Length: 85
Image 1 (cartoon, rainbow, N blue to C red):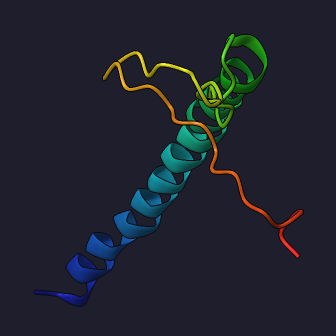
Image 2: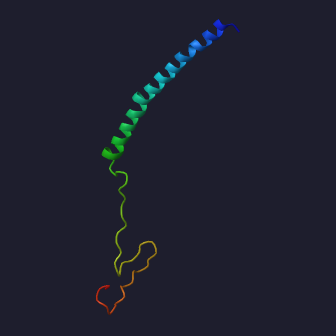
Image 3: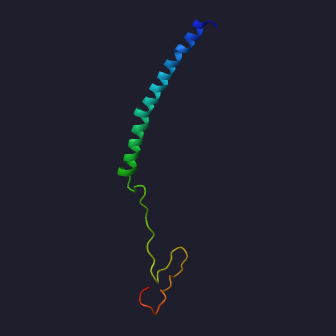
């Protein structure tokens, strides 16, 4: 190889790096960030059930019947002590 040929080979490397930079910045600013903003808006401001809020099961009291098993919740035991102190 002559020194001139190797010089021309490396001449395309900065152009390829620049193209990669341009493609990456386009993907980030025009695709990923707007998609993330739209996803965030829909998830936290539009949807009826926001993420992180869960429905709690109804509380059970003595005498209630568990629907799945038919079990009746027993009464609380009577204790002679007043309170738990």
